[in-house]
Amino acid sequence: MSLKVKKRLFEILEVGREDDLHSRIFDIFLIALISLSVLAVILETIDSLAARYMIYFWAFEVFSVTIFSIEYISRLWTCTIDHRFKSPVKGRVRFAMTPLLLIDLIAILPSLLWMFIPYDLRFIRILRFFRLLRVFKMARYSETMRSCGNILRRKKEDLVIAFSLVLIVLILSSSFMYFIEGEAQPEKFSSIPASMWWGIVTLTTVGYGDIYPITPLGRFLGAIIALLGIGMFAIPAGILASGFVEEAQKKKSKRKQMACPHCGHVIPK
Picture 1 (cartoon, rainbow, N blue to C red):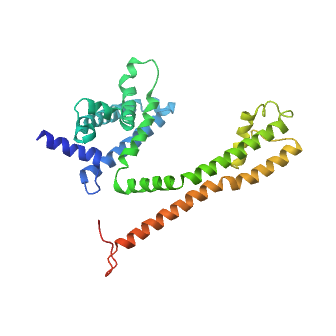
Picture 2 (picture 1 turned 180 degrees about the vertical axis):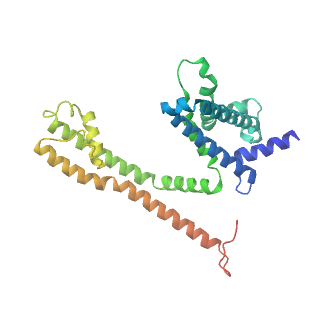
Picture 3 (picture 1 turned 60 degrees about the vertical axis):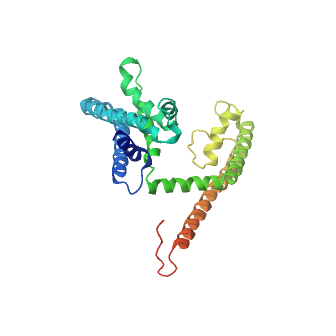
């Protein structure tokens, strides 16, 4: 009976099949609780709200930490169902060292240990947002994330070349601007690394206006770099866009292959 309960709980916590109603309800509940927990951390930084609703923030904190603690313990208890962590002690230790479980622990500990530590570490609860990576295991989310991963893997060489080109242009433009504007504005273009802030802002066409050239040659060069930046940063966007188009066509082709030749309906897996 205990093994049956453990296996069922493991399926709800870790497997998350689309046709499993209990797992979907748990995932949706956890997404909502994580989102509200992060929202509470944000709202607590507003002094007027923190003073007025302190008791409600505290009550919600106790509730959320209790749920997250139960979930953490449940995952440690059921992880031995997975053959990779089947050892009762060593398996659980290795499971506890996985990135998502470490994030879970970091998200819980500050709230449990705040009375023993003289610093306010409650902001670390923001790391709970990373738990969304786990609850996105539902089919429609994981399929989207797998598609993004496939695109990045397929286009990684092109992206490396594009970002390398952007980096070269950034270094050259920042170096030229340092030598041109360094004497006229030594406090702003004090070094090549300091000039790189101007280079990034200009190449991305953001233009904050906190640093800008004042010499005629510097302005001429800045205009050229700004125009160049439009094309430079469009390259990675174009690569990713083509990757998404290819992925969409691949899925469309797969659906056609799975369609019934007589009626045209998609044949379920």
